[in-house]
Length: 271
Ligand SMILES: NC(=O)c1ccc[n+]([C@@H]2O[C@H](COP(=O)([O-])OP(=O)(O)OC[C@H]3O[C@@H](n4cnc5c(N)ncnc54)[C@H](O)[C@@H]3O)[C@@H](O)[C@H]2O)c1
Image (cartoon, rainbow, N blue to C red; front, side, top):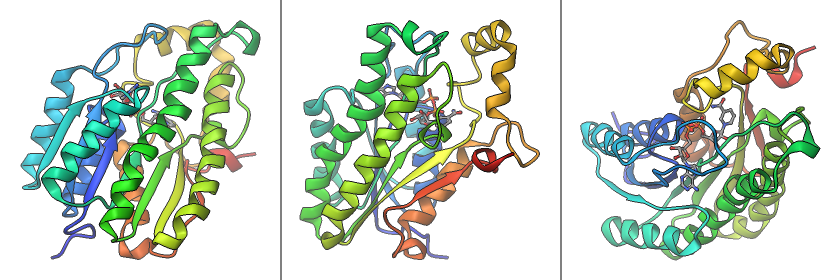
């Protein structure tokens, strides 16, 4: 059976682990070749371990196990030239670009908005908002040049739909992505390139399954109530987000653009 993304090429940021790895593998299963990159290093204001070069190698192996090809690089969404270099290498190898999954992100918590340190604020906006803009800015020209249309999916959060205490910097960045998506949608529609945001609820990845998160919730036990889903599931799986990206980027989603798609087990509408 033909895959839903047969013959396409997909760029994935933050591809070393978690949702990014799942997006790379899932799109490869549907027939896409993958251009993957990740920082694979620690950011000093982030208090849980970030991905490593070995993690990125695991993604490479998992994509290759599907029979598809992958170009994988270490690169930082905070450095436009480094993302441009990844895109150039990938497009030189595969000759086109059809999908951008702007997924790389970080998380940190503070007692309240006025306790967020300047480093925490700047790192958050630098990665979760400006980093998504840089990913798109670096990759869109290749997508337009290829002339095949395309799909850009930005990873938001339920924190892009409402204010959540103790993460104002994360919430501001994820709301910002919605504005970025709305403008890009208008600019890119004439090229038949669609742009959407997915808002995941809690996803079982090392971003939330770590000691720092456990300690934070121990200190503020009431906080967990902000993250309760309507459906009876504690956290969803990375593949649940990957499947939504496949849908949005496939023929089935060909006229879907400019939308915010919550994949949130009903969390944002729960009363
Ligand atoms: N896990 C959740 O509960 C959850 C919920 C909603 C939204 N999200 C969002 O989903 C996305 C993926 O997160 P995840 O859950 O897979 O977490 P994760 O920590 O497992 O993966 C994030 C990846 O992004 C990479 N990254 C971070 N900074 C980078 C940079 N400057 N340049 C390149 N790569 C960088 C990390 O190294 C890591 O591999 C993020 O945008 C996150 O905000 C996560």
